[in-house]
Length: 192
Image (cartoon, rainbow, N blue to C red; front, top):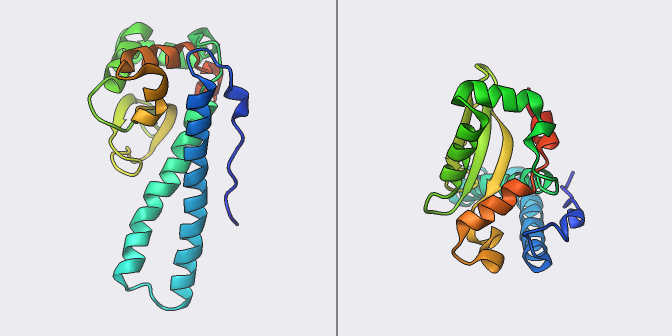
């Protein structure tokens, strides 16, 4: 069954994110959905034709992780935007983060510092499902650097397309706007 791009037009008008930036970002996301569906179709056809041992099959399998994760990471990113940035709406999570990092502010400092690192990619607040430990993890590419058994709670896109139209090289200003527009209740609901 093919994937369908979700509608995030409710984010239009969010402070700190121009409609131009968001519409461009939505179009990029829709491309990941389209490409995920195309790859599923191509891989299925190659399997039926007995071409699973070919270099082409292998490359499409590798590419699938990039496209699928690009789709899912954008969905998680958009879904945790559009709020008022009030962490009090995630009291249980805030308490857990404060306990591990010494304070919620210490966790936030680590998250923002990770997002401000040079390079392109994503930053994800993961919850280790087995141990209940939290980690702010840099993901260099959609499909590289994910933590096994890590539950993604909070996702920020730090590829240039996520901020350059509005912020140019001022990534810290983008990160500040992102934090001010978080839907902490959504982030907390993702926690196990």
